[in-house]
Amino acid sequence: SFLSGEKWDFSADFTNPMRRPLSVECVKKDWFFSAGGSITNFPSARFMANQGKNDTVSLKFSSTGTFENPYMQLSLLPSSVSLLGSSAMFHGTAVLEAGTLSLTEADLKWILLNFSKVQASYSLENKSGRMNTELDANLMGRNIHSPLEIKIDTISSNEGDNSFMLNIASKKVEGSVFTNPFNLDLSVLHTGGRSEIYSAGDVNVNGYILSDGTVNIKTGAGCPIQSVITGYVHNDGFYFNCDEILGELSDFSPLLTFDFIAVSNGTVTGNCVI
Image 1 (tube, rainbow, N blue to C red):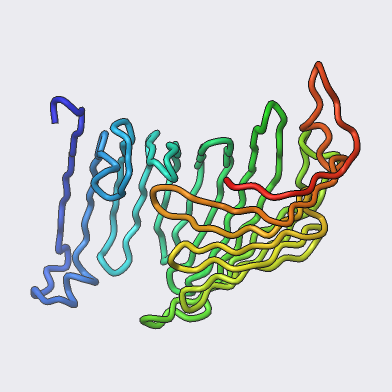
Image 2 (image 1 turned 45 degrees about the horizontal axis):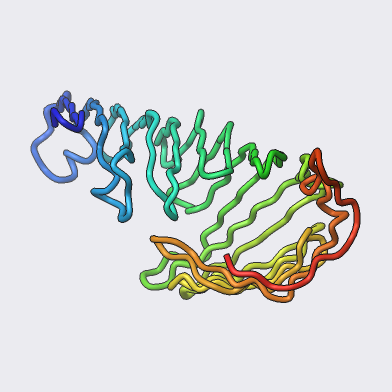
């Protein structure tokens, strides 16, 4: 499109070097192909709702081999999509080889969060994988830093029963927001449209999230702020009601320190709506 800058390029070659008779099995195993192309400024609104006019996806790809055993490489150029009303900007390189999908050189920025140095792999056969990344966040001029390891293991992938276990762990969450660093070990068991959340390590979190977006989570010992959080998350936004709030100001006093005032101790109680 001349006005939007959207552009598609694609080329492919197919060969049958052993001159096998044409059949479905032959095409799958004996035909070799080489393909490549690029897509520039593809509007995100064509595959996701509530997108801005500047949200576009650009990529280039190449693929060789046979249909049964292909090698594919996809490079996501700087792109963006809107999530919960804010643009998420990302780029990276994905490779599919021998049934394993790998992600390298990837970065994601969304609102206050920045995921960098993303390295991930996922087995299409076992439906399991892991990802390592560095998380950095900025909150009111203070920073949070944490190396993250994320693992996913499929329990059942039968039709109508997609169950899996997700684990998010960090040996050290630190930054000027917190007085003391802590470790994180959070697990999510998803089955039957329900995701159960529980934790180990220094932070106590438990609750559930339903497939319709309903959220019910309780934060306990180890969390800077303890609360019962209920609400929902939908494509167009979210609503959270935080009850039974209890926070020790000493746990995050750096966040409340400014040139004109400093808070070093005390307790916060109450409720709020986000």
